[in-house]
Image (cartoon, rainbow, N blue to C red):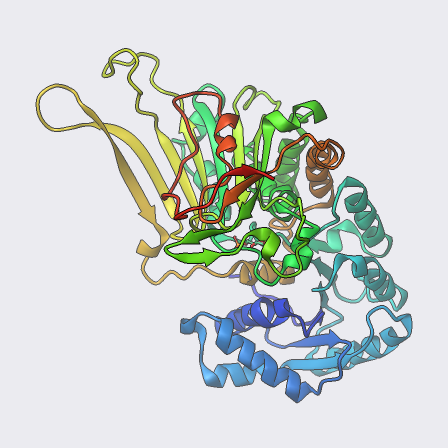
Amino acid sequence: MQKTQNLTIVIFGASGDLTYKKLIPALYALYQQQMMPLQFRVLGVGRSPLSDNDFQLKMQDGIRQNCEKHHLDEAIILSFSENLKYLAMDPESENDYATLKSTLDRFDQEINAKGNCLFYLSMPPSKFGVVANNLGKVGLNNENDGFKRLIVEKPFGYDYASGFELNHKLHQAFDESQIYRIDHYLGKETVQNILVMRFSNGIFEPLWNRNFVHHVEITSSESIGVEKRGGYYDSSGALRDMLQNHLLQVLGLVAMEPPSSMDSDAIRNETLKVLQSLQPIHEENVDKQVIRGQYVASHIRGELVKGYREEPQVDPDSRTETYVAVKLFIDNWRWGGVPFYIRTGKRLPTRVTEIVVHFKPTPHGLFWNKGEEQNQNQLIIRIQPDEGILMKFGLKLPGAGYKVKTVNMDFHYSDLLDTHLPSAYERLIYDAMLGDSTLYARADAVEAAWKFVAPIQKAWKENHDIKIYGYPAGTWGPENADELIEDKDITWRYPCKNLADDGNYCEL
Ligand code: BG6
């Protein structure tokens, strides 16, 4: 394990949910596993006045509520929280940065951090530009004395132009090598495992191309609705919230060429090429290649589940999609002609994220009569929950004749005794402390992903004939999504059945 250098982590937006639920618990978990530097400070920054002690008490509570049980140890929680400090300041006011600078200088003396700083912007993206700029004005972007790194949270814009503009603003004060755009999907252990599975085994890679792969599915389904985030979600929707970032990044890892090394740029150059090779979906084809839906009220096991439009802070006439399914192609030598199907949605029957690689059937169906559906090999990479890998293949059923049955070879991460899967934030913050940006989204990749979704956004905005389908909460999204897959023998993989007792599929 590499040792991290002494540093101060400054969290802007310290009173927010993310800090309480994810960031501080992740830092604590690293501390408990002795992965934090010998000496460090975490400085929470926010507008509301708070003493160090109040901040520490609140964060201790966040740790107890949100950390996995096996990490919890009261003595360690107390010694960790001695490193937590708080500074009340207005991040948008240039004047307040002198105090921030002098506080950081003081910490530098106390913990011998040699100027190393990690700034975590856990705040609305509209503030990123001004905070980066203000940091720059007091020299807190200058790496002459210690590293200065900036972690930013999505959304990285809401379309191509704003994504580009945001990158431009960040680049005015910070070099791209100092910017860490967090995409928590890349921090998931099983997402990183895509790289290891593909490139540490001799058996998969020769088959990983158009000659052997029939099609690929990427599903990320959630059973929850928009919860308390109706306000944000209604101006975002599934395309921006999940597909443009998390799922296209995952696609990048599934479809990339082998990198020449494990160097951050070597890997990110390859994932970028995938995003740049996505066949543009022309506006006139959007309704044929993209299906959008919105959940409507239904009963699940007798309980009424609200429709999206009834959720708090959601426009009662909203046409924001809570489901999106896309059929896309990658125009390159490896994948030419292979359809990739990606779908994501809220209020689907279960929470599951998985990648399914469907291999082509054998060229000659020895064991099948004409017209019979032939066994197809599938490799299923389960990102969450029940992280693991499942291979499906045909075997002979015992007895007379040659009846073929599809059987499973199934690996579960939980079978690795004593192995705990670190949370995405643990992994990502640790990497940022080390200066490893492999699992962070680079500006050019974010822009390439926006470029791909731009015609979809435009068509949805301008062409009111493009339908949005209502699907009952607890079902697998609009039935029309099946039509994206043109082969009549093939459907999406449904890891479980629809749950809704009632409700209608409809056009909204
Ligand atoms: C977030 C989205 O980025 O990812 C949420 O904003 C979504 O809407 C979440 O629920 C899903 O993350 P996970 O790790 O639970 O799959």
